[in-house]
Image (cartoon, rainbow, N blue to C red; front, side):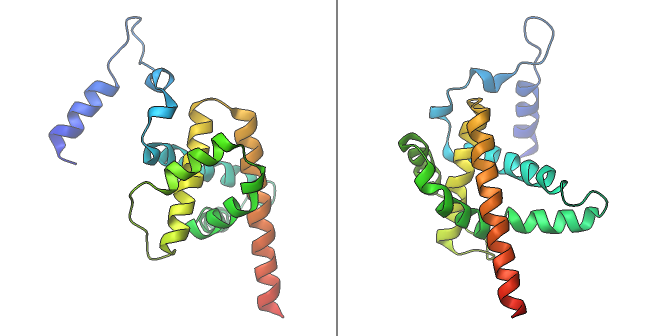
Length: 163
């Protein structure tokens, strides 16, 4: 991004509202009209924070271990597996949001297949949509189901490698 464009965005984003405070612009946004990659951007941030705080119930002192473990849990590979595990529990509207995110044009990293990366983008778009539309109970429910699916699958994989 060019510096002038960045400056313009900063000036626009942090303009005071009529009361002297900073606008909370996302509250004025129609979530259904947002680009799916924007939803995925927000959903990715939420899922990272959810996983990090959820892992605190197991470990509070070893930050490097927490970081390493949470980074693996939020990877595209594991998010794709989480979506597969929750898909049958989603509403048609939630599945439609997922499909919008999955079908958005993006570039997959080397750490995941193209299908896994697109699935994880759809999953993140779903979380972002729920977050921005303040459907907090459903958001928590989906994030917790995903945590359970990922952690159980990881444990199974660890056990299989030991035997």
